[in-house]
Amino acid sequence: MAKSVASLVFNSFINDSRVLKEGLSLLKNGYDVEIIAHHDKDLAKEENQGGLVIKRLAYLDRSVTKSKLGKLKAYLNFLKESVNYCKEFDILHCNDINMLPIAVIIKKYYNKNVKIVYDAHEYETETYALNGIQKKITKLSEKQLIKYADRVITVSDSIAHEYVKLYGIKKPALVLNAPPYREVKKQDRFRETFGIEGKTLFLYQGGLGKNRGIELLIEVFKAIDDESVMIFMGYGELEALIVEASKESDNIFFHKAVSPDVLLEYTVSADFGIATIEDSCLSYRYCLPNKLFEYIMAEVPVIVSNLPEMSKVVKEGKIGVVLEEETLQGVTNAIKEAVALDKKEINKNLKKVKKIYNWEEQEKVLLKVYGGLNV
Image (tube, rainbow, N blue to C red):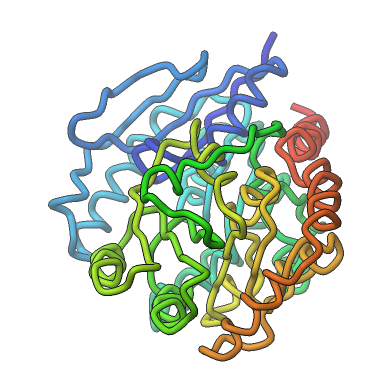
């Protein structure tokens, strides 16, 4: 009989590629999987994606619920409904720290045989948004709850080592946020869309939020020579700033986010991909963002921040440039260095590296974790 898995996530599950990939991998390998998400306006309470059941509980309208008190009430309501719904599952897969209490309550009071997989999508207690009493509560919660997890998964080696040091647990398994392996035919979507000719195209794709070096990139490309252009593709709080900069500068462009199924067809149109993250918290310092692996899969050379995990991937694979410093001069120098790279050699290296950093390799780790649960 197939083992049942509830994958718990406190979002409405519209565009959570990691949870979707994990769910589909488990499904095709014989597990019965349901994604337990929160309900939101204009979404079905239940739907099916490629055989994967999505169950949405505890209505939460994010456009209305803005206050901390409102969010807490919504979370407690979700916790109550999730505990009630998930009691009989064999395995509870907790995506992020705020889903762990649900699993622990079920294990302690309703189903002592349930197995818990804690999937820390980042360094959960060291994120930029956490501070003050909220940070203290999160740290205390994770310390008390993580001991109930049968296995822990995380997204970078540095974070895994931190969890070992903090809690004395077995080293978490590494399941990286890499896309499925594919060969992407070279295209020129950005040049066709914006009428760009004869210029080197740099791309930043993903979340357009603060602490990602976006403001610095805008300043660099306002001042840089006319031979290079910068395209920002995504959505987020800095979107308006980028649109305004694109009106003021001939070599800055904004493209709205595209769906994950066609993303790499745009990515491959760039000459270089930029993945900058400011060293503003430990979670950022140790991160390995999706966009880095998306650039690699599209065989696009990269420019990355000088942070331990990202720089290691780039230096070991010899697939781009690591910023020496996140300043106007530092970024300008990195761009010049990137343009001077041996394109033939870089392309050969990218073809090798993409065979390492792809979902098929990450799936093997996930299945090994589940195979060891002894359900």
